[in-house]
View 1 (cartoon, rainbow, N blue to C red):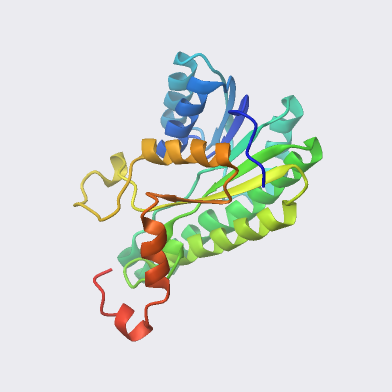
View 2 (cartoon, helix red, strand yellow):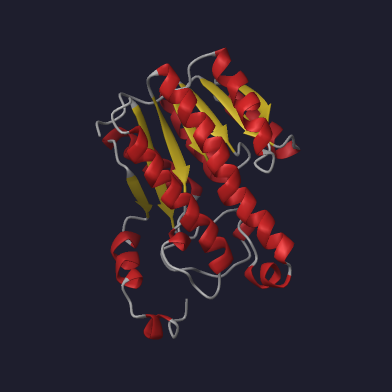
Length: 251
């Protein structure tokens, strides 16, 4: 797959209040991106994100988007693409989950799965078709290393990311040769305002580091990006660790 020709001029973010999405949008606006659509649930956080990017010189519009309402996705995203071509779609929404609470409350687990997987499948397919119709563009999907192998401490969240990751890989294969590029990004633990109270985590990263990796991956035409890059061999080793041994690891 060839590299994307320069930074995108237009960007659609699904999950516009995400710290990773905002860091990525800021980085791209500092390069060449001038039009940004931030799609998410109406909130003060979404408005702040829009104001932040406007302060950097971008033309920013907010779009009411709900991952849990897939029946609305075609209409909502269709209106965005009707306003003009979109060079890059960043699928950045998702719930982090709380393993202990989700195990005790199946409906919480279902909501997590519906947001992280079902909502992504719906909006991802709609966006991919729109990009294909215009004949060019890229779809970047934020996955997670948690989807590489089920762990006792986060298998509900991890299973949703495993489904998302497989879907995105297959979608990339389906779109190969159409002019639309799909890139899967697999960050490790990302230090954000929501995770500030947690202790140090090996191979952790930041929204800014993920944003830099996204930009570099697009420039290179990468299909899979690990953040940090050292996680790739680590996760390959864990993926092939015998199950009896894996259960005893402090993961």
